[in-house]
Image 1 (cartoon, rainbow, N blue to C red):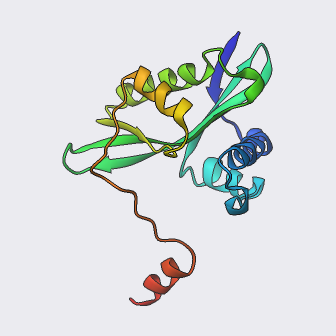
Image 2 (cartoon, rainbow, N blue to C red; image 1 turned 180 degrees about the vertical axis):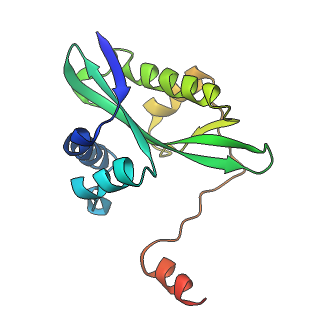
Length: 158
């Protein structure tokens, strides 16, 4: 019933729909400014990130978008999960677990030392799911971000 596959350029519109649905769920629609052309460029032309698509009985059910980082301490690449989304009608069918298994298998096959992601602190269902997978929180680390004007201002200082 569950089919997983690498995303293809023709999936850009569907990926965009998933991203918008995820943004609405996370109450962040106001921050979602991407479009299908950008996704096509960065996922399939420049290959800066990748995605895996999930179908349930032939119907589009969800996706995961990931990219690679690098751990200087481990001296190995890491796989970073940027977003995972399963449409509400398809939840509780093992789709998210299947996506995580697919990504974990990829990480192991590519000798990644880590598989990491972030979660909103209010998303208790996701946190419980991650604990059931064996994931542990990194409580001593906080995420830092430069974006928008602050990013451009720092870049101009060079």
